[in-house]
Length: 349
Image (cartoon, rainbow, N blue to C red):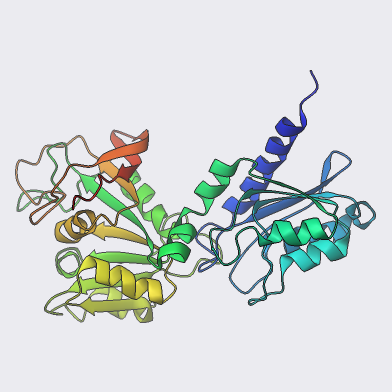
């Protein structure tokens, strides 16, 4: 059976999405974007956005095609996960480069969420006689840029809340026992989340009690800068000998004093922080959930009953329960990782 044009377009866009995945966690404050160029039924160029200030995915793919298949570039089709840029920033407009190289069809998945730019690329390219198709694998392409979309439309970072707990909901064990609740494999999996974000948020008590390093030790991605380590404190009484103040990344540690969680996000958003990982403790997690700031949950559950210790959500907790959508459940050895996105109930007047 011959595949339809729609099926072929979706198949090629999946390849562009695979390219975009290479840039996750590396491009802030820009979004991760992937692109491929297709001619005569084969890929003649591919690329992804590697870092803010460096060439966008479309430019990488055009350069790749010019290097290895220049004779096929004229009349080719460009697949890109996000609407091409049409303004001058750190780099030139991708729409200009597309027009100049002879591409005759452009297909993208997600529209630019920036209201200043949305839809302009289609007008520019169509006016130049280039065929434009939009919305191919739109949901998947929008999903790729969720953190950027939140930041560019609200000014606030995308928030991932990570928790490791026992079966009875504790994040600490009884006095005299060891520090860890979850397994080595589950903790390594959780540390890999750091490669996705621009900053890690913890409370001062977590530093005092656990003295964590909060570094990229597992699944370190080439080119990934150590995320900022943001410590929330009331008293600022934090040991100066803590790892976060003495290691090679000490300049990547910030202490924010006497700010509630929404204020913390506002401060980070103004500084170009697009995504954050909240690693604890119980009071900071409670603030994040109580302020309805959490966009994604990664929750590890160990086959352990502690009987005492801190609950996962401390303080006064939340006024309403929260259901998760797009839930995934993954075993990690004898632990379980549950991920999902909160469905926040409407705010009542």
